[in-house]
Picture (cartoon, rainbow, N blue to C red):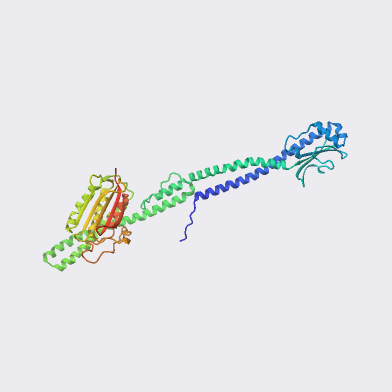
Amino acid sequence: MKKIKWYSLKIKVFILVLLAIFISFIFTFLLSYFDAHEEIDELFDAQMSQAAQTLLLFAETNPGIAKNDNKQIAKDALQKLKIEVYHKYQSALYFQIWNDKNQLILVSENAPIDKPLTDKESFSILDDENGHWRLYTQWNAAKNLQVQIKENHTIRDSLIIKILSRLFFPALASLPFLAFFVWFFIKKATYILDQIAYQVQQRKATQLTPLEITIAPKEIKPLIEAINNLFLRVEATINKEREFTANAAHELRTPLAVLKTQIQILQNNINNAKQTEKILQVSKIEQGINRSIHLVEQMLILSRLENHTDYIINKKINLENVITDVCAELADLIFADDFDFCLNISENQKFEIVGEEEWIKILLRNLLKNAMNYTPKGGKIIVNLEVAKSRNNKFDLTISDSGIGISDKEKLQVFNRFYQVNNCVSNEVNAPKIKGCGLGLAIVKNIADLHNFNITLKDAEIGGLEVKISGNIVL
């Protein structure tokens, strides 16, 4: 099986969304740059055209300027206009006015006087060692005056950069806030996935009802439907197995009971005839029947337990009374094998728990019968009920015996169905009195899980096995 490479859907979507936003931001920035460049060019070109018309009008309305071609006269005329530099970009604007005889009649102080600024008509571009320039040429209506204007293109570029920087840096500063909101809304949008995962995680292994979802995105609808269909198929399969087990157990119960009755009648007749060998054979048959009856009863209990996995337990019971009742029921078996039996229950404590009394009794019977079956005659069994040392709202119930115990390896497996311990010693003294069917501890584990009890196994101080059950006390 190939190793699954996991990744975070939230982080992946977050990165992809931010990447899309960044690409859109760059695209918008470039689009804004070209658009602003075009608009600013049109604006400055309009200003150049307006300036040219103004200069032509000035030259036409001052006949003295048009009649002189002396540079000093031109400068004097400019002085009469009182042209002063009020803006840093103003010095980057040059102009010349020529007459129809190719004589320079008016010039700005920063423009050359020995040659025209350009030989092209209307708008044009010039690149020289001094930079990149925009030029404009216009004749007056009489075609006797021509104005040429030269403007450094740096003015336009600088203005474009300033405009875009006013857009770029605020947008850049807003990216962290945008990232926060993107992450927040992604978490909101994927919250349902966390809810579904939590709902599945909190389920018990036997809870196979469909997922209860009231609202969910359409994209995960096939997944939810597939999971629910799988639950239904698995539940149908398990129900068939449970039904088969229950039916088989019920079918076996009646003939086994009849067979046991017949064996007892035969045994009584043989006892009367004092036929020792036949008595032994019949006794072995009876043991086999008893074991079969025990198996059937355990299967029935297990079937009932599995059919109550979704049952809500809300009854309050007194655990002390339940333990006392079970010990009283098993008193004959305890005395028959002369066990050193000890029941310790902490005084002045109220061991009230939430549970089903019938199931708790079955749990206790199975644990006590296991202890008696695997403990030699005259052995010791201790039942102890006390408040947990770590927390006063929990109880600890321990059942210890001086029997053969269980190996550490098998402690992990004894709760599996039909698993039987293999470390039984061979001598008759320590051998189990009734060979189990491997369902007793499986039933105990199911009942413990049903009540949210914690169950642990360890070696007992008195030599055998110690079973510890821990659960909550109703305060």
